[in-house]
Image 1 (cartoon, one colour):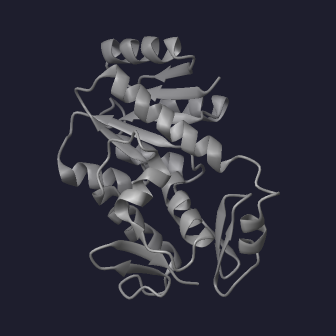
Image 2 (cartoon, helix red, strand yellow; image 1 turned 30 degrees about the horizontal axis):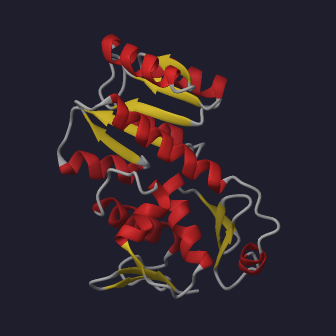
Image 3 (cartoon, rainbow, N blue to C red; image 1 turned 180 degrees about the horizontal axis):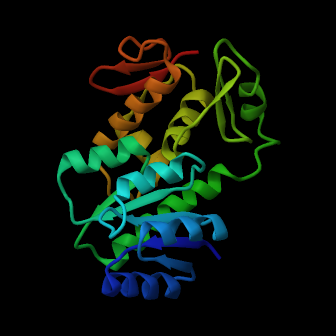
Length: 233
């Protein structure tokens, strides 16, 4: 049973989400503020986090940043703030998806399930995969360890979000291949995703900041104008 950490201070919304997800066979732990959320996060090691941005004792963005400092757990933001700048900011901080209020419970469950499926697939055993064995050989300055889910830059680990690693994993396993934004979205979210292609651009920007010497003139993660992106080792 997958564990969900729900961080929502509105009691009625929290009740509806908890009931709906529980009926879908999720184990839901609820927090009404940031302090309680941190305690439940440490105690239960959730498989996915659903996080409201407006909380009584902290900003949801700051809480998202706190989780990202120690974990790559998928994070779904739910918020009444529907401005593009708010969504982009959340993704840049490390959120994996963003759902604007009001929303349907069916849509929330679909997004939660999509994040969990991608996370489960990423964590599946890969030892017998020829592609993994070949790609795990260190080459130049960037190495992607698929089993440990870690990117190494000059032999130093790089912290990434769930979605950033998924994008990099697909690049690493297919060097030189040009991916469209839609293809990358389907890789990191699943075909039942509701996010926009702008999300991919944000994740690419963040990845470049982490693995490129000069993010403005990237050596590895390159833009193919009018199409998408490709990775060069």
